[in-house]
Length: 270
Image (cartoon, rainbow, N blue to C red; front, side, top):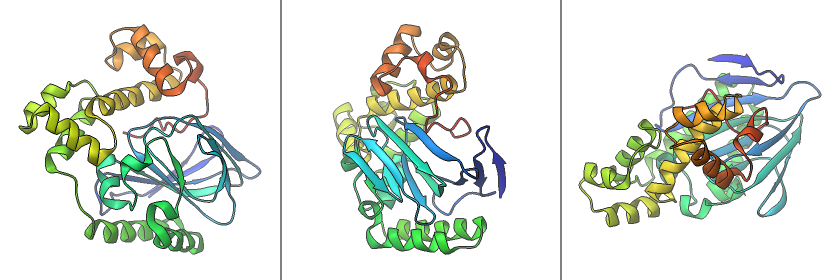
């Protein structure tokens, strides 16, 4: 296990090893004394689950209006969403769409454009997990609880088609620089079959998945202050205008506006 502090004072804790279930990243977050959270949630190529520790709630403003949630789940493209809170601490899970299909009670299709409460993701089991995490004395114990919970959920859940999982991995490995025809040829399916099965199981089309993965790569660089022209070249966009169109479509703002903005993008994640 290792921890570090962000520039704004937030403390981040990560386990030293991997989890029992593939496709999940986990981290603990605690805001500085007297500090809080005010963050834009950007589209990302995973489902985010925030398990709040204690009774403090987050104010979530998005397509569903204003919600007060102690824990939440957000799909890969939650729509324009802003999250605020004070004295907040949590365990955050980032589930690949492949893992989310197997681990969550809700379908990835139903999470499109949504930010939802914890019981929609895991029912009563989720609420009990959150309570146990809050009662735990230290981060290693919390990470152990998460590991055991996910292993139990994964043991009884259906898995995506191997071809769909392989196509998702290829999209991620190539950072979205792949065509649907190439994916279909690699898995031995027709384009129509791949499009149908991929969308039904992961919640978006292969083309949209590639766009999202490429955008996430760009958003990491832009939020870190990298020049839009250099970002466009590094992330496989045709030119800066192409990058501008994608960023505006996903966020409603320009690439330069993302620089220095507090967002859900984690520059250390992959």
